[in-house]
Image (cartoon, rainbow, N blue to C red; front, side):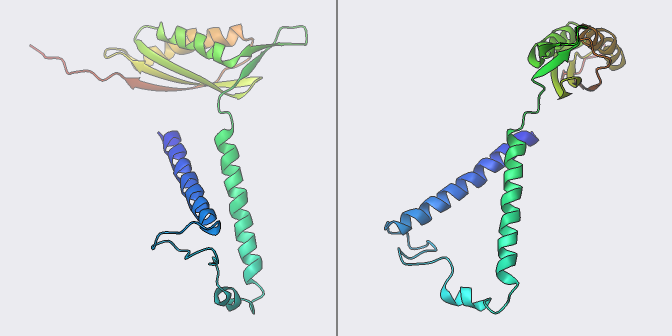
Length: 192
C-alpha cells in the first residue's frame, strides 16, 4: 500500500513539474498563454527587478537560497535512488566447500520456499521475499491461513520444515525470517 502511494505521489509531482516547465518553455518560445497563467508573454520574467533588488543589500539571502535549492536537489536525488534500489535479494551465495562457492538465484529459492510453505497443513497461500546480503539472507514470509488452521502449528511447521530445508540446502548457518500470519476471510458457521 505504502509503495503504491509513494509511486503515485512521485508520478504526480513529476507530472506537475513537467507540465509547469513545459508550459513556461512554450510561453518563452512564443506560444500565447491563457489569461490565468502567471506569465504574460515572451518578455515576462519569474522575478521582476523590484523582487530581485529587494534583498540585494542583505548578504545572506542569495547564498541561503542557493543552499536551500542544493539541499532540495540532493534530497530529490536521494529519494530517486531509494526508489530505484532493489529491495529483493538477487542471488544467494551457497558454500560449496572448495572456497569458490556457487550462486543461487534469489527468485528460485523464494519459489521453493513458497511451494513448501503452501504445502503445509493449514496454509492456503504463501508469499516469500529474500532481503539482506547474499551471504546472510533474511526471509520475509506472508502466510494466508485457512479458516480452521492453528497459527502456532503453522508457524512451527514453517520453521522446522520449509525454512530449515532452505537453510540446509543453501548451506547457510542461519536464515532469519519475519513471518506475517493472516487468516482467510470466511462466513460464520451456524451452530445448531
